[in-house]
Image 1 (spheres, helix red, strand yellow):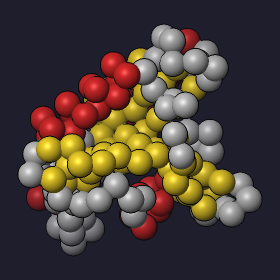
Image 2 (cartoon, protein in one colour):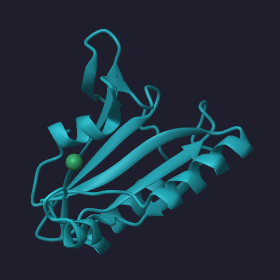
Image 3 (cartoon, protein in one colour):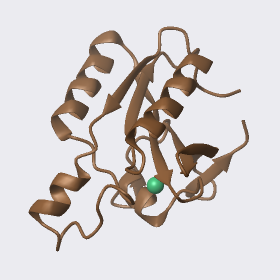
Image 4 (cartoon, helix red, strand yellow):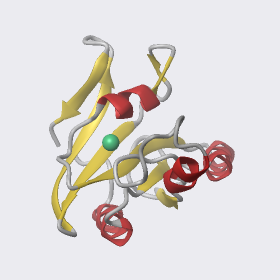
Length: 152
Ligand SMILES: [Zn+2]
């Protein structure tokens, strides 16, 4: 079962096309049991800003990377907490790249080698020539201790 409503999946695809050729990013919060009541947040990809300010630390621009605006993320997390919701999905797009979970994606999902959100799913949407080509889900597997592709 896809852990998202069809509406939200559609919104994520549109977001990926809107931001193309840059990466889009966002978060879905909700109740663990069902997609009913899920709330989707399109986040601002501040990677271009970071790259411009400090290209040494941020060698990539938004075409091949994303960074969520941290105040937006804090607000989303506190909203989830106040509603008794969990972080269900982190999504981002890969313009002109396939829907894989890159080393950089893994690095961002880990803190000291442990998953920051072990229950969350990660959705990667592949966009080529401003068309959705593919999408894939990844989640932390405590057996293999890595992010594995999910079959939905
Ligand atoms: Zn990625």
